[in-house]
Image (cartoon, rainbow, N blue to C red; front, side):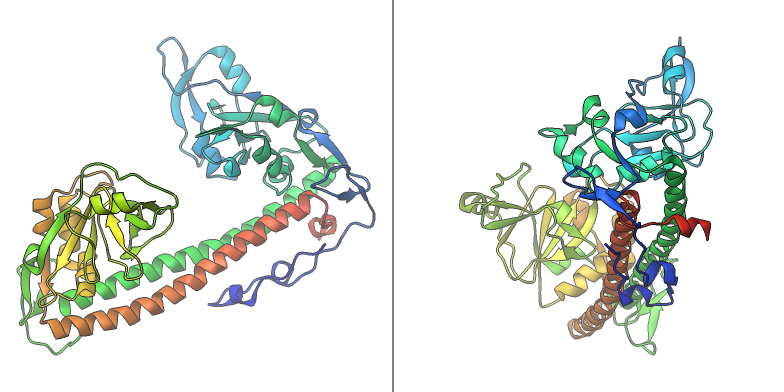
Length: 472
């Protein structure tokens, strides 16, 4: 087996991947034998397959987050600390808690310990590992975690952490996870799982190799993520300028009476959004019945983000639900969907390719098309005076409730309708260009992440021989 070179798209925009990452076919071991394990097939002839309980001492923590007066102060490494970090270091802000002396002695973290998440809401997202990378005095393994302490002179914690993150090993936990709404592993599930075990010096070499390569890949991912952030900031700034200053730099201006905004085009008018709408339609303050095979999309607050309708996690209802939830008004082309909380202030156009009804905490804006271009309305909600008002009225909270009176008072700067349309056309083209750039960066992140995972899996299962890579 060889690891395919990365696609050339990943080298765009100034990213030059080193030859040993981007365009190399890795060496294989000289001799292999059957592993006796279906998901692993063959392994290097000098490796062994071993149950995890023989490679590490496995224990489940029962140290809770409570603080008691008769216990000693400690810090806890908790579920999210492991889930979001490959390495547990002092850079993490651990939770303050207390514990009994026997708990401190039992669950104190040592360098080389491996912590894994033993339950999850998704069986495909279980047993996420992280290695303790340094001395952490008074830091204990917290609740919902399993603590694996490698057998001295036989097992390497960093190698074990990489192995537990690899395809095959990880699949064992996914298959064994039990539950309905939350899935968990028993101690025996973890102890009896199989792990490929090269000799200890080789484990250490593999871990050192993967440390170096994953750092390089992670640095490239961070650059792409930073690029996306900069593109989003630039697009927001350009949209804000267009909906508050217009496209004509020579247009006569007037004071806006808003200190941070400065002058605005003289012929533009300041209006409340309620004066640009036929009506604002609130929803029933209850949840419509969902049906997986329903023919009508229920637009909920989670489906509206950054001016777009997001279909991830979409819910549907049937004929009866649709009729009931459109009694006050059926969303139509040219209407705007607006979220009043969780979070407040998101908006998008009503889709034209399907009938929809709006869910709880959603508001429908029925636009007066003689005074407001629907696209200009959405762009304005996210920028300028409307954006500032929304942030202030909803207090920037993801749970703040945005009442209907405040929603109707959202301010906008309104140019004549033909000028709105020109601005909307300009911003549509601008957004398409930014979307294309961000999509390229997101694709690069996906490919790099996949390559990172493939490289880890290949190294810890013996599909590639990296021993000389470390020596070099």
